[in-house]
Image 1 (cartoon, rainbow, N blue to C red):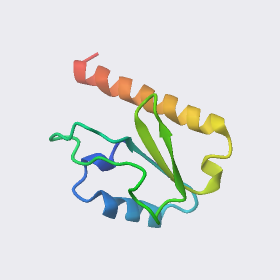
Image 2 (tube, rainbow, N blue to C red):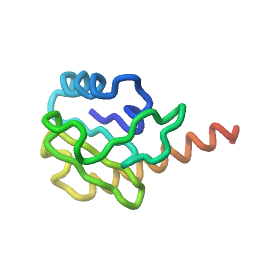
Image 3 (spheres, one colour):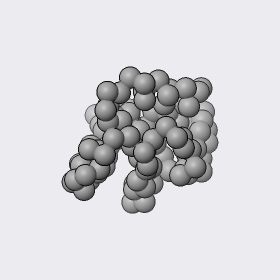
Image 4 (cartoon, rainbow, N blue to C red):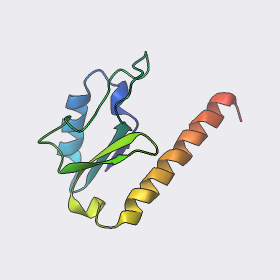
Length: 104
C-alpha cells in the first residue's frame, strides 16, 4: 500500500497512519514533505525522522525532492530502483496536478 503527499493535509495524521498500517497486508510506504517549513491552510503538519517511531520499520529521505518516505516491510526497499521509481512517480503526479490546476 502506498500513500503519498496526503497525511500532511489531515486533521489527525497519526490516526490515518495507524489505520493504513492496520489495513496494509505486508508493505506500506507513506511519503510526505520532509521538514515542511511552510505550514499553511493546505499543509497542516511537518514530519521528520522522529515521527511515527514504532509504526514503521524505518524511513528514507529524498533530499533532492525534500520528501521523507516511511516504510514497513523490507520488500519496499530491497531494490534501489524501487525508490527511484517512486520518486519519479511522485514527480509525475505533481506535474499532472499542477497542469490540471492551470487547466492544461
